[in-house]
Length: 190
Image 1 (cartoon, rainbow, N blue to C red):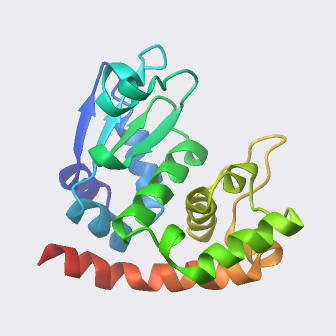
Image 2: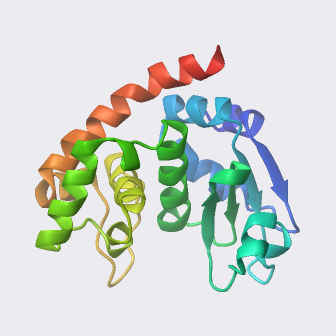
């Protein structure tokens, strides 16, 4: 799987060859996700912590975004920029890329939007990253569903079991999204 990922994606590196760490994280999502993102034309840019993402991303430069961004998915560029290759940040960016590659169900599926609103009403999110928008809600649910987590002191675990316990409705919706990925990957290829 790891060699497939190396060949599937264009890794654009500044001066940081942390590609191996990103590949390990991407492998946690499995072959179907790798195929989906590959066929969607995703590129991954790895940078050293001192490099500014805005120096590599015209979209973020135009928006004036850069400070403190450890990893980010830029939909208009089909790129994930990574300065800090850890499961939390890269997994979240991959979750956003999956949502985008599936046609943004976070914005279009009324059941997901309703689940987000219900979670907001009860303040029941898998992590605080999930709170911002329905897109980040889906991204964190996908990260948890695929078990892309590592223990961080003071940060809640993003695991399938915890997602099921905190938000069983979103767990079910995430499982439904995951079941669409193989078909979507094949459909994008044609």
